[in-house]
Image (tube, rainbow, N blue to C red; front, side, top):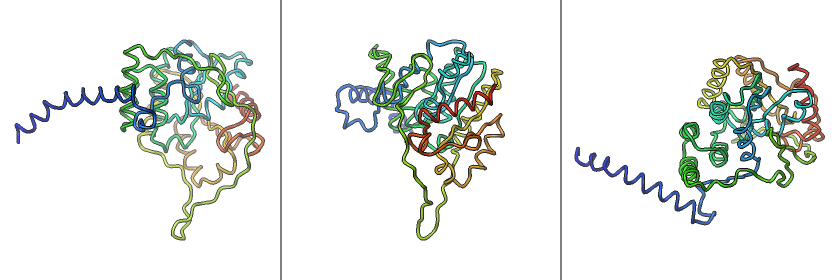
Length: 314
């Protein structure tokens, strides 16, 4: 038995090398339809590549915005610049607290913000973070922080993409460092991370509780323990660096927000960790006229939201 275990241990390094080589081969030569567990989308939707490239070349900002797509589509850095404040939007698609914590560790001391605005959309606390980890791994540099993020969201997709991204970085194959400013209905605003969407309007919807076996299943926000730990680690990091911060909930459509039963519980948890502004309560927006989908503000809504936030922060 002992000899059998020793033989397995001797075989593991060879197996690991073979696995890495197979991932690289798969990424370079196999058609996309066979890459379900290797998602390497450099220059993908959301302009993460351009944003993180700009982050790497930006220093000393007044305001740093953190969060998911509700962040990079919700905080217009041009508005705050018009008020005399240099700001940067470090949001990314489906960014969970795990992703936020790793990005902040990488960029905080370089950006040196005087204030951090952290958009705490509840859904990001209840997802696994795989989507955002894949997005950031493909579009940012690969380093220790990337490894930590991949380990915390570990599955076949994130591991394989990390291996392949590491290979491309070492081989100097990441020649694409910026994306076209315009992609479909989106326009990336240079230097500051905001994405502006063409003005469209949301079709008004109502939401019903799910019924299973004759019982009503109420919708609730659920906080994953690993996301909770990462959120609290981010707050601890900001406090350790003595950087003021505020926690903000950007508006979503009132019908979607009201369809959740435990908004008060989520809000009570967030309020324990810092100054908190919930703009679902502070603003009376129109679900059709101020949004382009159930979660994201359109141009009209962004303007109203940013003006209200600025007045609150001032």
